[in-house]
Amino acid sequence: MMEENKSHAEKYDFQHGYTSGLESVDKNNYEGYLSSQVNFEWLDKQLQEQKQELNKLEEKIAHAKSAYKSAFDALQDRVLKVGLAGKNKERLESALFEIDEKSTNSKSAVSPLLINIHFLRVLFTLSRVFLSSLAI
Image 1 (cartoon, rainbow, N blue to C red):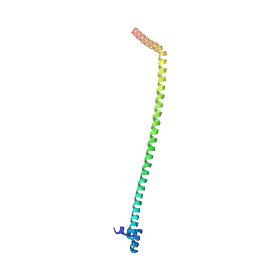
Image 2 (cartoon, one colour):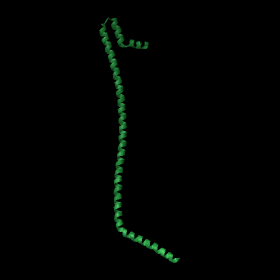
Image 3 (cartoon, rainbow, N blue to C red):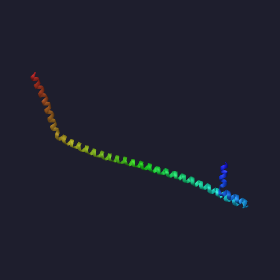
Image 4 (cartoon, one colour):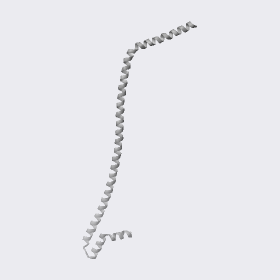
């Protein structure tokens, strides 16, 4: 408390008031001056606090912008991968359709051959069974 009074006694307004009191200056003039000085200091303090709060908000905004940019970049990467996967899927489906078409076309041409080959296998198997029964 003593240090507070000492620092207060060293301020210009205290010295001005002390001098004014000694010189018999009107009390209202000095009180108005002192009141304006106190108001100025209070407003200055409020201004400093608002500046600090503004700086904190600017830091938060910068951090949010950075986080937004990172998230947006990651999103764009995933969107690109999904787009490429979709195109790859379409390409594979197209290739599969072409293979299926070729298979269907070749089956119709090859079917009689496959039947003949199957018939020949059955015939060969029967002939082996028949020959093996003769050998006994």
